[in-house]
Image 1: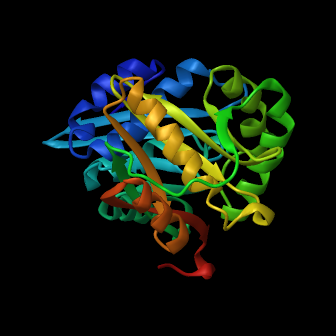
Image 2 (image 1 turned 180 degrees about the vertical axis):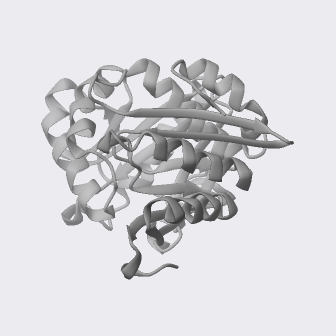
Length: 286
């Protein structure tokens, strides 16, 4: 077991696990690069750890109040991460709200977490990783895609807050809101403009030649007009034109609309993963 403070050293040590699933690997790479581009505050908890023993490999990561990612870690590694995180329980902000990854790794972490804390895990959402290498033609609604500017920061912040509330994202809304101006400055927020902003999409680098798209959101009053579809298509084409060889995103399998939208653009399923929440044992387990 090794903890890391250098995101690039973490990625190097995690290489055996990342090689198992390119879609999951892009999440880890984007996460690590996000730490470099937008460093955590002194009060923000970050956990980066790798495991390698007896042929078992693992890589875990967490930032702020989100779930702890165990990805494609072996079960022995996932259980070891639970022990290690528990050792840091003196810092309340370091206690994970949930766990994210392939089902065996999630169950191994959660089973050990229950032994240590008495808390169990319940399914929040089943997710699917998708990859795009070519953009398919999609219908064109009125308006056009453009880069967000500083004047869009308030609108994007409100829209992202609504997105977080709608999908019940277990993260620090204030932290994400604070990042909006920086992400706009870095060119990582796009908007569909139809006499004003009506949808937005974000993206992050996953070097050397990939990127991840997230979040994507259209306020309820502007839905059903194809804005998000056209926006993600245009953003995806721009990223491919800049040299990205593959684009990745995650969908909720319970949302047929978003899955249909991304399939129409050209995203193809790659692998499934799970997000569990930790709850008091009386709340049950899935």
